[in-house]
Image (cartoon, rainbow, N blue to C red; front, side, top):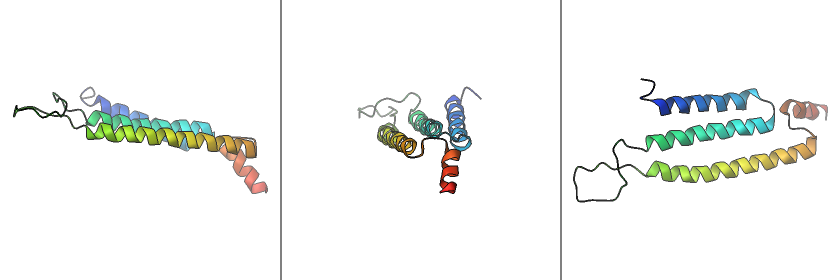
Length: 117
């Protein structure tokens, strides 16, 4: 059973590691890494469900018994990867700006400085 659904197990493990990292860490860069792991898990899930066992590329043939793979999940993931890279770049640039302003990237220290002012 484990090997029949190996892609789902990898998806769940990566998703939980990413979620745990986002929730448990106070370092903003580590939070961004956790968010990226979360995104990668979702990408992996969509890519693996798009593959049909024994399927071929969706090029129409005159054979009635041909099984086709759906290319839509792969196309959507290409767009999601671009959005994910842009989101990560924006997040890291905001973290750099926060570092310039507060002198730290630790969330707890930033909140302490905010409380003092």
